[in-house]
Length: 246
Image (cartoon, rainbow, N blue to C red; front, side, top):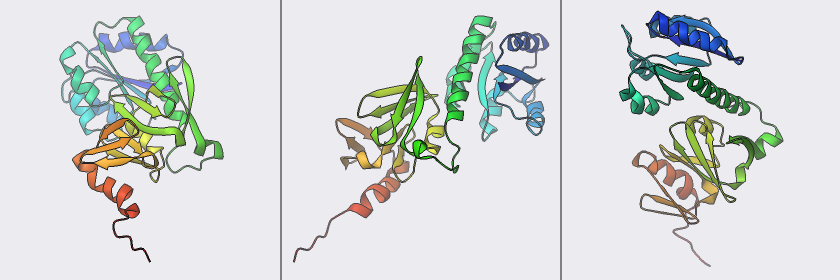
């Protein structure tokens, strides 16, 4: 069961979405708000998993609200304006629903939220004790199948909006997951962020040249913001540049 909130300044829009929520057995409507400022008060008293968020509202629009929230719950945009879609996905919204919203489209989006919520809950919380099984592998959902991924088989990970592609020695796996969430659950001694869109396994790196990392036939970019950390963590402690032979 996921606790959700509807934020929309139009009473009919709020009631329409609320009627949809009541039809979905894994959604629990904990409140409705006319603007994001009301939600801030609600968050002090309720644990919220999902927000259905309108954009054009008085006092504060939905996009501005997302920009100031440090750790927002899952967000599904509900709006009559398609022009905000790119900016919304850049802010990691889960989906973008254009009004008038049909129940079929709403239900598809709600199921996406359910799958994402389940994936997040399957990951151990950062800092929590890990079992031997947790240290060795994890499961992700790819389409209708759950795939077992071994940590020591991961070559690198590429993130795009709310999806990640995990490249392993056996192949690649695409799943609905935020790159930041995945990064928090990877051992930072074995994996390193090298770009806003890439995480690599340090033990699988074959070479570094210029602003590129080479892993087998794969070429992964290093961004300027991460280059110093990459050189220090991956190269510096293992660099044999002055070897003396007796």
